Image 1 (cartoon, one colour):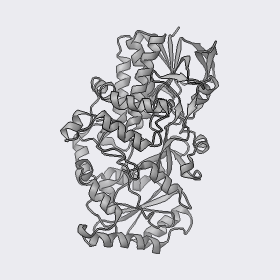
Image 2 (cartoon, helix red, strand yellow):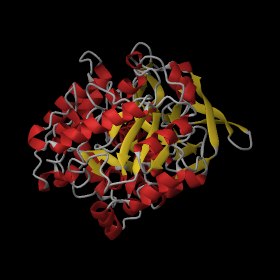
Image 3 (cartoon, helix red, strand yellow):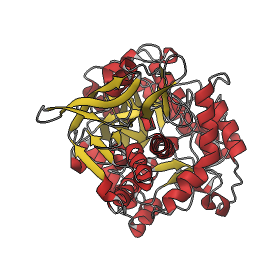
Image 4 (tube, one colour):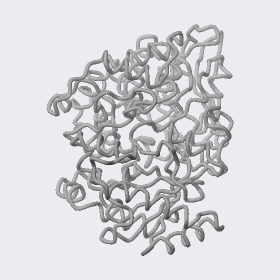
Length: 532
């Protein structure tokens, strides 16, 4: 019989299993997906990890400390100082991520790009004071494969059994303790019931269940949009949240979600509503459904992702357009994830440098040729006609689009010393950091005849991460309604809101999702090993 059952074969579950094997425990790991998809959503991710005080930061002249990181984290997430466990996990993460995430990964062969990215700088609420987003060389796919290989090559591999295609439905309890789980085979429908000394829930969040996303939609965002694309795992449906709740566990902060404002339909969908999250070009104009520039504060990515979602959802129609030209798209357009960053994913240095210097022509051709939300045209009248044809109405006004683009281009023509446009001011600010300068145009006009053709992208809200979840203490023990640990039950990763049932608060400083899965998974494995 297994001593510990781990539910979920993503990064958190794998890290928990590694710690359990290190401690000599017998482990059964249950994964709902197929063996080919073992590793979870991390395999598809871009692979950015929030780290503090790294060699990459020091080489770039960045002086960072856990104290500064914690101040940024608390301010950006608007954490309530009386919210005990989220605050405790936030402090634990910034204090421990250097050694227990960064160094631990490097010891297992994971490397990072030389320059950390600077994201979530903050807008109305202070964000990252310095760059902390460390991108895995090889993307999240490399991260997952390295950890899977570490699992498979573990000297105690014989102590581990992995069963894929297993859908856990319930937790088994006796005398107030969790003693195992029940479920069915995803394909064959065979019922199973398993017992163990401890159970670790690492089954992800609920943002793959769009109806549940609507149910927990935060009041700051008004009503949920008619279209919400799915950028989460197809099995991130909240089923294990319900099982934990039924066993007496406490769920918290379920309305805290990390969604994105620039989702487009996946050209080759693998699940209902499958979306891709664009990294919106900073030099593009962000327009509403009528083609008017959203303002008066223009939308620019890299400062406050949550605010972008709120601003789009506040429009009469809750989708948007981004308007740019080919030159802007080649330099600035990006898609989050391993699939659309093949030069980084496959660790091809020359191809990566080529794309940085000359523009990502492969991505431009892929998206304009295959994604239904991209339209290309020679001039504004043709572009607006195609935008309206795509949407199936005459909502976009040619006069509104012309007014927005002409005013923006006129600002650029006046010269940098006379720029009085907040988007241009932010572009100037972004370009002061070398990591952004190479990926951001220098005041590029939209209607520049030498930079065409013109390009418009229709963008929807896309679901991604659950920031809330199962409440846990600093040993990853699941807490009941009275705040007491439930014997035999632990939770890690997104299922636990990455720690404490919501360690990010309302906003994440980015990179703390993968990092949170690694740290909380390791802690859960260590704690379950000690208690079993």
